Amino acid sequence: MSNQIDRAPVRAGHPVRRALSRAVAAGALGLALAGAAPFAAAPAAAQEWPTKPIRFVIPYPPGGPLDLVGRALAEALREPLGQPVVVENRPGAGGNLGADNVAKSAPDGYSIVMGAVATHAINPYLYAKMPYDANRDFAPITRVAMVPNVLVMNPDTAKDLGIGSVADLIAYARKNPGKLNYASGGNGSAGHLAGELLKAQAKVSMVHIPYRGAAPAQLGLLAGQTDLMFDNLASAAPQIRAGKLKAFAVTTPQRSGFFAELPTVAESGLPGFDISTWFGVFAPAGTPPAIVDKLNAAFGKALGSPEIRERLAKLAAEPAPMSPADFAAFIRAEQAKYEKVVRASGARVD
Image 1 (cartoon, rainbow, N blue to C red):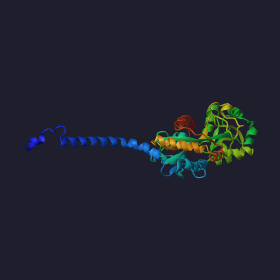
Image 2: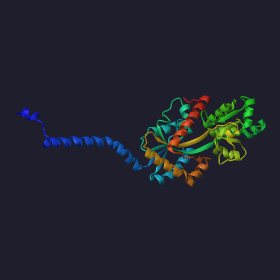
Image 3: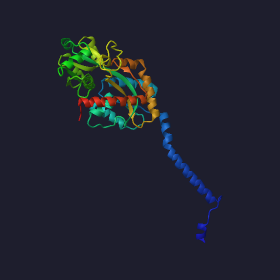
Image 4: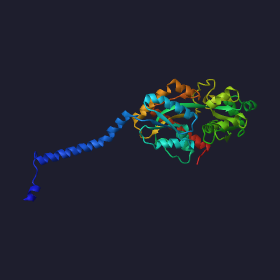
C-alpha cells in the first residue's frame, strides 16, 4: 500500500505540487540573482567611489620633480574627489618598485601611481627582468605633463670647435668620428638615449660618458670634462641664461614656451627627432572604467588650475592631459620608439 502511494502521480493543483513549484521557482530566482550580483555590484561601487582616502604612489625619492608635482596634484584632487589623496614614495629600480606595487594592488581605484617614460616605455627594454607588464598590468588614466630636454654644449668647447648650431655639430662629428663625447645621467637615462638617437639619425660617432645622475653629468659638462649633453630643460635653464651652457635645440616635436627662441632638433636637420620626459597616472588593470573616468576628470580639473600650472612651469613643463584611450595609444607609440633606441644603444640593466 505504501509503495503505491509513493508512486502515485501528483496532480496539478495538488498542495505538494504547488509547494514544489514554488521551491523550484525560488531556487531559480536565487541562482539568477546570485549570478547577476557581481555585475550589479560593480556599477554601484563605482558610483559610490571614493569612500576613503586614495593612495598615490610616487616611484621616485621625495623632493624630486615627480614628487613635487605629485604632492601638488594630491592637494588639488581633494576637492573634486571629496577624499584625501595620500602620497607614498616607493623609489627603487628606476621606478619599477613603486609601479609594481600598484600593479599588484586591488583594482578598486584606491591605489594609483605616477608613472613616467622610464617605468612604462624605457625600462621594459632596458631591464633584463621586469616585475610587471607595462601594458597588461595597468589601466592608463591620464598623461600629466611633458618636459623637454635640451641639447647643450660647454660654451668654450663650442667656440673652440666652431660649433654654433645642430647642423654645425653634426658636420663636425661626421668629419671627426669619435672625437666628441656626450655626458648623461647614466646608462639608459633619457639623456643617454637622446644621444643614441642623435647618433643613429645623423649617422655620427660620439663617445658616451655616463655619470651617476644628471646633476653630476651637468657639473662635468660645466667643468669642461665633457663636450655636450641632453639635459633636462628645467635644470639647464639657469646655466643657459647665465651663459655657462650654450643651448642649441629642444628635443620635443614643438618648441618650448619657456625658450621659444630655441628651435627643435627636428627642425634643425633631423626630422622626426622626438625625445622627451613625460609622466602620467595609472591604476591597476581591471579598475572599473567608471572609476578611471572619474579619476581622469579629476586630474584634468587639477591640471587646469593656476597652482598646478605654476608648479609645472618651475620644471619648464606644460600640462598635457589625455583621455585614457589616447594615453594608452601614446604609450604604445613611445614603447615602439624606445624599443629601437634602447636596443641600438646596447644599454642593459641585469
